[in-house]
Length: 153
Image (tube, rainbow, N blue to C red; front, side, top):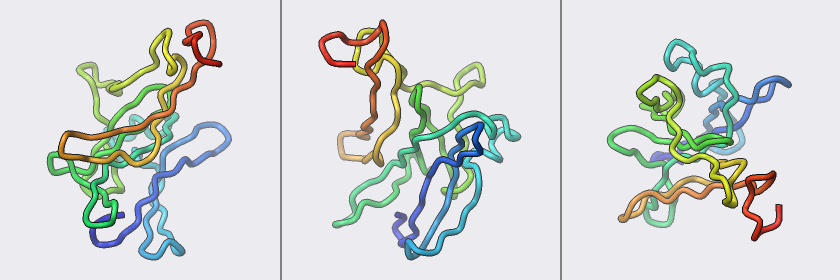
């Protein structure tokens, strides 16, 4: 939630073809306002219809509450299923993916051959900003010929 008590939900919309990150907010966790796809307005809709899921907002602890934090003046989220990407926002509704030098989605972490995450790096719970940096947990999928054989598939 934000410092003023607004809850922000980043969820996966599913139209039976393409999963898309979407945004909803609530003040009471009962009544929600849906805003549609998170990347709908970014770069003239370039990523609106691409498969996007698994978002993790950067948060920090304020007293006994975990609240959404800004990084360099903007809200920041990690997202992705087969690679970890990032996006920024000024308002928590309209998100702009971070791009690389080729104007493609920048991959911050990707599957690694011979490791537990050889097939998937999927963002997990909210990332948390600490005095030493940001901690992001992600799921890995260990399967196929490139898996880490010291662990089960």
